Image 1 (cartoon, rainbow, N blue to C red):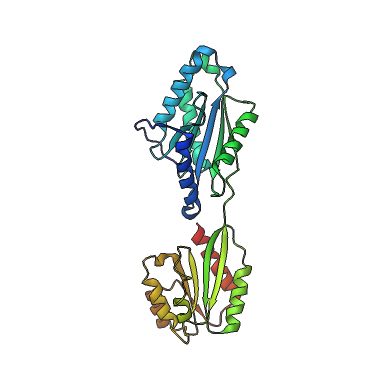
Image 2 (cartoon, rainbow, N blue to C red):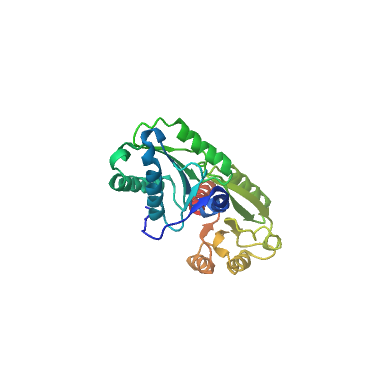
Length: 301
């Protein structure tokens, strides 16, 4: 749950200043797997008498500035409209945004429900962003449409708008390093047919360790699953394993060692060198598929 710390008031940003922040958060949302939320809030003007409008706007703005974190942002889409506010809650999905709004509602009830303002009605649109492909204008258009269609059924009405909630599929590389052509083809076909939520597997096969190490396939930052035979004609599996674990970003690799050696000492040695999963041959293809699906899920979560 998002914690709210009383701190110095955050500034109110213009739309031109908030768009770069949105684009930066959006660009990192897939890799970090951490959504953020954009919130639009408006007050129904007809619920206020004219003398109370400016005072209510000032008090509500000050309340938002006090309650938001320094990592969040408060912005205005139209400097002429004093009754509309925008918020970006960093690293907060709609559940955390809902909790924040609940606490904000309690503060509004305690601090601002006086005199003419007891009948103020707020309409709120919450947009959780999990998709890096949604541009700012489309997001704001969807949020404003939700606010415009709101009939203010209650004094504090929230609409959750799913325009940017659909998660993108993340690319996960899979390398099959196996000298047996038939085994390579079977493994490649099996992996390509696997269906895993939010994951798009990119599969390449190599006939030996040297072929793999001379490629540039494993240098990218993508999560990378390696199916590695231990006995290969050039650069055996242990040599490939050593080269991968010597890389500074070797945590991106999940390495399956396929081998006919099933002695306990061989397994211990492989694990000590950095193997993640030891697969004695012959192995059950369905079991391997299930194990790989679990790895895909772990790489995503």
